Length: 332
Ligand code: AHR
Image 1 (cartoon, protein in one colour):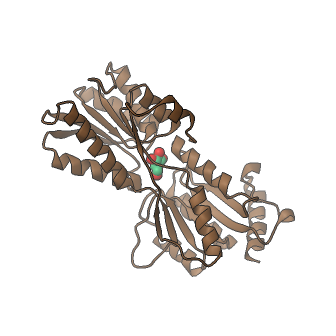
Image 2 (cartoon, protein in one colour):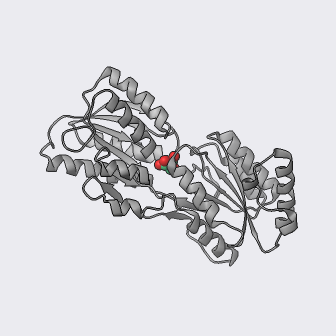
Image 3 (cartoon, protein in one colour):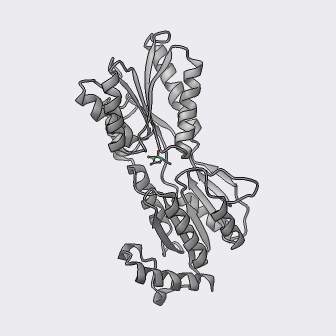
């Protein structure tokens, strides 16, 4: 009954909100009471990674696979995510899946979901909780570990190049402030800088996980200094923006005496830059989370136990290990 009501409600919302056909989950005419209704609130479409994540969830939670998916794009606004989750609660969906923009500010809305007895799966980014268990499961990346992979690779690389004791000037372009990837990747870099007295942070600016913002902030950093050894960007979009600004300013980005660019995500485009040497190291962040969400929901449906925290396996690619074959086989 819950599903039928949700679909009728959703159909009404679709009629009144003028959603595109693609966003219309299903009309009451084709309802199947066995389908599992999932409301998914996505942060936005700020990066290639995010687009791949949305597509993967949509491709997995399909009607053929037993689902009705109600998708909402929050366009980078936390208030929109809260509004969408509230709408899912009113629709009495079976599950709420959401990728939180930042870690804080979710307690009240998640308490509402808990009171309505709707399980919540937090994906991609994490949330800060007060005393209550406000979600059923988390599926995503260990962002601090990604950052640690990057800084230990850098220490190793510099040592092999005989630069272990040399001053290393680092520019840091951060992701959306307060989001889990920013918090984890930033913490790993800052800790490594504290451990290496010769590593110096010459600038730290927010690029908001976009190419445009990173291009802009890198441009203004370059007006102050061009004496830069490493640029640590918190995603591929930022790396592409920072590289464009550096090249315009006459700097070369490569591992052979140019600026060492470190990036995260390892999207196909990011890996093309790695193959050309412009990105020296690209640490993977896996957006293909749909199958994990599917597996957890199916287990919950069967009354089976699940792990509350699920980290996805990830790797890294550098200028020496990347190949055309890897890029061609890449799914995102
Ligand atoms: O939360 C995952 C991060 O957010 C990815 O690194 C980035 O590209 C995205 O926008």
